[in-house]
Image (cartoon, rainbow over all chains, first blue to last red; front, side, top):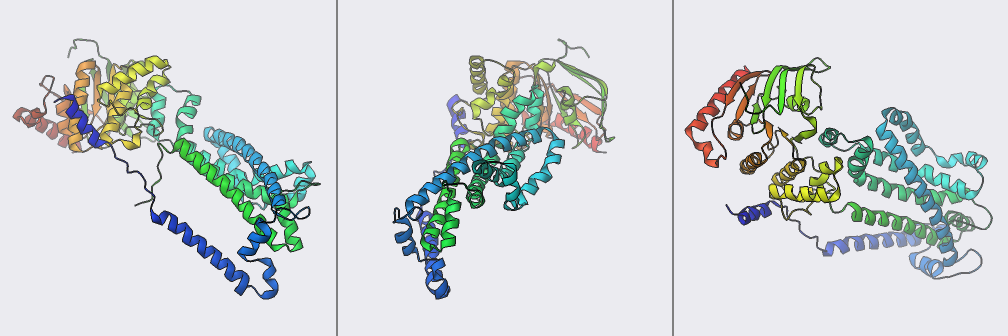
Amino acid sequence: MSQSVAHAELVNEVIVETPSRRRVSDFAGPAVVFALFIGIWYLLSTVILPPQKRFLLPTPHKVVTDGFLVWRTGERRGFQPILASLWDSAKIALMGLGITIVFGMSLAILMSAKQWLERATWPYLVAVQSAPILALTPLIRALIDGSTKQRLLVVVLISIFPIVSNTLFGLLSAEKSQHELFTLQGASRWVRLTKLQFPAALPNIFVGLRISAGLAVIGAVVGDFYFRQGGTVGIGAQIDVYRSRLWGAELITAIIMASVLGLVVFLFFGWLSRRAIGKWHITTRGQ
Amino acid sequence: MTHPTPPALSFENVSMRFPDGTEALQGVSLSISPGEFVTVVGPSGCGKSTLLRIASNLETATGGACNVDRGSIGYVFQDATLMAWRNVRRNVELIAELHGLDKAERAARSAAAIDLVGLNGFEDKYPRQLSGGMRMRASLARSLVMHPKVFLFDEPFGALDEITRERLNDELLSLFQSQGFAGLFITHSISEAVYMSTKVLVMSARPGRIIASVDIPFGYPRNHDLRYEPEFGEICARVSHALRGAHQ
């Protein structure tokens, strides 16, 4: 038996991957849903809403002409003030997310090492996740000075749970036999964490990151509603002003831009996830 | 029974009782020298795997003594236990890495091990891109890197199809010949046991005791056709009868 024959047989054992090809349905699906969305919007703002309430939801083309295409009129109206406040909120969201990641992952690592800590902290994490954080605003205002810190705290409280729970789940997901392999080599706890548990946790960590990132944006936007100071305003504060003054087109524009921020952050972490673990981790869809 | 060389692994009257009261092993004695390949067959749950876990110190026996150089054990698990995030080369390097070998040494040893198991050309593949047989080859290579004197195999080929399994049997035997380690192999397959071994031990149902020891007279290298010779069949029958006794 020659070496090359054996090798040829081996090649047959390699699982062949078919490259994914773009199909018409990849584009048709989103296009159809988008058309439906715009259609329902027109229906709401021209037929379903009673005439005296239609200022609440201007038609899509009115939002484009009055919201997106007006650069700036006065201090608050126009696309430029919306972008400026969006940037303000984005900074808060990203800083808060950074704190959440560092703190949440550290907590998850400690929880994975000490079961008593896991048991002791779990109820509070669940409570933080389900508690109406915004009802605590008077307390937060009383305890912390400065709107930036207050807003950051809201972001962290709102976004911490998914990153902790997913990281912890991931760290505990390595197989028993893999752990035993490390035990056989006398591996230290640190080596086990860095070479086994952490890499094994990466797919879950990225799931947690994507969810937490979206929540951080929500936290920043709603935090704006309650904590603002002087001239700097986040997109949430801007939305609140438009809402109270009944500026429908600006209101919808600001809401869309806040969603776009969430979408960008979500897509970024999806891209990062594929870059980091796409080579070895696959998701399956049944067919 | 005298050995040409002192045993690399020996059990003296080893017993194992788990904290829940289950008696897994009862008075097991055996010894394996370098160049010997001993296979244990027995009913499911008879404590065969416990034997390996004691030898490798994953468990501590509650009675008797187990003597082995713990720094020189290769352990091949039932599944390949590869790290999904490492490609073949880095998986094969893992144990060497955990032992603190430097980069150049790791690279040299893993290249040699990959060569031995015939995975050249697949160094950059990830586990999910490999078939079951190739994963097992990578797992073998990973253990080979540290040149263990004692090799423990916990039903490594149980999940593979028969053709792949027989091919890996031959490859493992040629490794056994070239490396000269002491092998302790667990399997459910009688023909695999007889084909591979210098000696086959039959264990009883729980609590596991050794109830038969069958010396295999064939020399190495062994040829695939050995499986179809009458003497091979007779030995398989003897092991099979002993195993029936084990089930009661």
